[in-house]
Image (cartoon, rainbow, N blue to C red):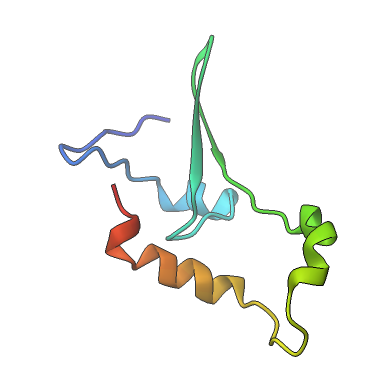
Length: 81
């Protein structure tokens, strides 16, 4: 499959590929140079490593809404390059 890089350094993924890879607007992709070329993969975030920090979180806080955080971060112009 071929895609073209726009003059704004953007690449458009075909809808079928986005659906197959379960990607959506706002997802972060990790770009890695390999011997074969460029590897592009979804960047994952795991909270498993935070167990030792649990005591630092004040009790009574509502659960974290990661979708809301993702949306707010994606719309924050200060986080863009």
